[in-house]
Image 1 (cartoon, rainbow, N blue to C red):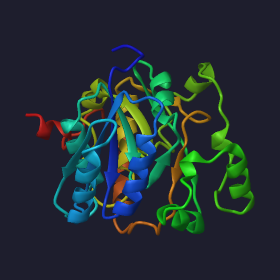
Image 2 (cartoon, one colour):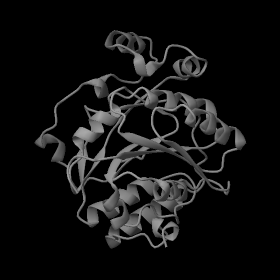
Image 3 (cartoon, helix red, strand yellow):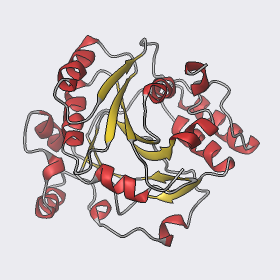
Image 4 (cartoon, rainbow, N blue to C red):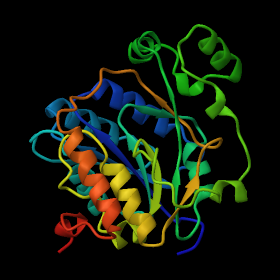
Length: 275
């Protein structure tokens, strides 16, 4: 496994928000580096989402595929595992279906890739007003100039500017190798071999919350460490109401139990789709 991926698989999670997914796909279609594919991981959306992806796939600049599972509640772990099983890349880049990317997003993640490390990026939150404008067909925020971002910050349309600062790759990105906190699958990259080393996401995490942190914890326990993607590859997160979090407490307890046991393998993982 080299430090330069041959093909990147961008796994985009979605559920019943096709307008947001359409803008996310727009941002991915504008990448400076087209050495990737997109696999939409649909956690049980209505047919409109499948139709959207089918229409886009006909003229999309990179391969675009769709993986759907029955709607049985929030099952992001299972949805992502199935999408990975259908993907072809040697490097996996996880993105949420409400997160837009700048034109150098894929190129930057390719540059940051390093054997035996996963990369965690960060995000900028868009306001409800700016999100409504973007979804209504306003100027794509992923094409904003620095001056436009500055003006948006002054108007309170984004929550911060710091993630837009660009710093080169370097040893400072490796200073917190065992930190699992704050790692989210709205912006997370990992080698395919390392994903399978820990058997992907634990599908016993059902309902919102903490399946991404638990996955990262198993990566660290297996000898795959954290590299910071901050100040390099942010995403622009559309505003939305919070997910129902009725099962968060149980998921949080499961996370801490697995961390205490230093688990490296998910019993209910991606291998069920590759047997």
